Image (cartoon, rainbow, N blue to C red):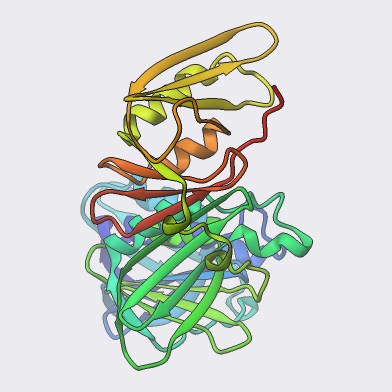
Length: 372
């Protein structure tokens, strides 16, 4: 096999594909990247049994074929080469990588042992890649940590992706937080679909998507592989089956609230982080509404802190107080830029957070019970 290819394109593709190599592969062959050259196209693939990534790039392929090369080593080598054309030449045992003034010889892995790559399902519809990546980022922090998402709560370690008409909805929860984000969606047919993918996997896929559109393929009913395809990148990711709670049934309704308080989200988040410094364990902050301002306070055995910020309050008694985990509060405020309205019920009932602009984002936060 012999290939001539641009160094920048090659380095970018190998670096991207190597993301889909497991840190500690269960079998040695999965430490490799599969290179396939044919008809002036080079395809570079990585696979860890749960997720596969395939990058395609234009190349001169005077001699076609398929080889498997140690993945991260190839990525490091191609990244250090000068900006020029690179020649890849393989025989039965080694791959020789040549660029002006540079030559590397890399061992080959047995290509016959490389498993068959899963195929991405047919696209169900398309969305803007940048908007999809932003939506994943907005909800991912509300998912349960992977180390905790085991057994009956395994589904809470994932992000639920649901196609409904011309809208795509992403949701995540860890029982204490719920984050929901929607974005426009161009379906290829009338069917509505739902899938669940672990939050770290989907977050990693989304942030590496290129600009333009991403075609998303939902798995067959009962689970399987989901597909995410852009112009030159294809990812197939294994989905999870069940275990995600019906968050829309437990989220509080704005029309049932006692009242609300409106905040600048950056100001509220900064105040929460500032006063939380004094709490080393069992962190919580208390928000007390007093007319046109809110007192944000943290106290316990020893140090204490408080700060005051402006707010607009409606329907809530003066002195209404509610406590939150400051990290949970700040993560749910992060996706909002304009003012937010926090709908309030009782000090022990979850609150609903809604941006006042047109951002299609909603969040629910469970308060912390405080014993005076």
